[in-house]
Amino acid sequence: MAWTYAQSKAGYGNMWAAARIRAERRPAALKIASRAIANKQRYAAAASVAPGMPWWWVAAAHSLESGMSWTAHLHNGDTLARRTTHVPAGRPATGSPPFTWEESARDALTMPPHSLQSVPTWEIERCLYEWERYNGFGYVKHRINSPYLWSFTTLYDRGKYVSDGRFDASAVSQQCGVVAIAKSIAEIEGAPPVVVDLPVEATPPAPPARPVPDWDVIGWAVNLLKRVFS
Image (cartoon, helix red, strand yellow):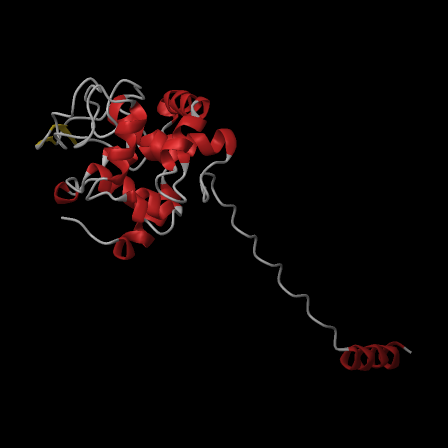
């Protein structure tokens, strides 16, 4: 099952705002974010195939697909020494192995059905939608939030595809999801365009208006008292 971006934009925005990195996972998420920032220029070069794509979109996907290995395909973590053998198999379809990481990344980002070069805008909701579409909407039918996005955050507990097509409801992902990575990058250098990671303080209610004195009544009362006690 899948849905369009228009159908899911508001939901992704609400989830991004609500998600918090779990305290015990925060050091690991920050470590990955620091590695991503150290290779920002390389990720930015890869992201340039899709106008407007943030460099950290590629960095987070790289972490999930291959643990940020530069000797593995961005498609699925298979070795660059040959074409991919896991889904999607046989990529890149052109060229000769061994492939450079950049060659593989270009193919992974632009191949159908991803075709990320055709994405018109890259607001945070769109980033989330494209990350989930990149990995697949298979978690929808199991009624859990995809760990590819939400692992290490308060919006994920358990449930994981442990291999292609094999879902284990009790398995807990040990990978840092892209949301925790993006939020950690934001914490370090404010990269994502929309970051709502701290509780928003409620605006205190205005104090009640003070009553305006009715000076005519007050003057009448004063004159009355004067007559009584004179």
